[in-house]
Amino acid sequence: MLKIVAVTGMPGAGKSTAAEALVKKGWKRVVMGDVIREETRRLGLEPDAKNTAEAMKRLRHEGGEAAVAELCLQKIAKLGAGKVVVDGIRSMAEVDAFRKKAEVLLVAVDASPARRYELLRERGRKDDPLTMEMFAERDKRELEVGIGKAIALAEETVSNEHTSPEKLEAEIAEVVESWERNARA
Image (cartoon, rainbow, N blue to C red; front, side, top):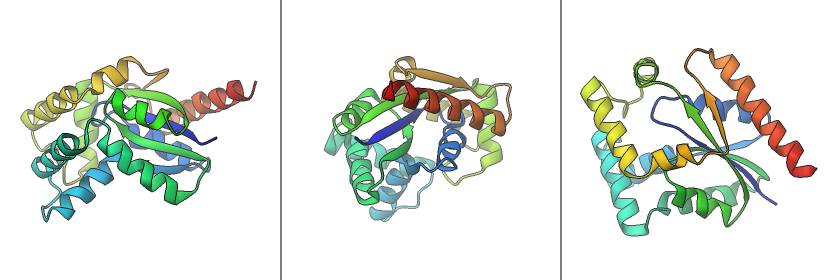
């Protein structure tokens, strides 16, 4: 059966670092934000913070709360992999969509707002918030689509507050290896 590690967390918490740790262990990766950026480009828009927010709202309005997950499932099917890490869960509806097709471990990556803002500023992606006001607005938007519930209901939580990328990667790898061992037992 397909195994999915679904990674959730507020923007900048370290989801991509956690997902990359699993890629290094042979897992395939699907990034939910990439699906939204692709949709933004398909609409003929530049994938900046404003346009990706609108594309996300449009996808969910037209296809339901799990619309992005359904598009990810199409990508996963094309990969033909048995183990996939999905980076960027934003709602339990998305988790439920994945659970219809796979065994799923929901992992939350946590960091304080100050730490997340610092990490986003370092990352410098086109759709990252440029100001603290934009950061707060993005957090509000993510909470409105249900990310808080996904974080609260995660089976595992790892902290990215006082750690290095290497330590975060080691922790997520251990969490997933433990899950796999227990699934076989």
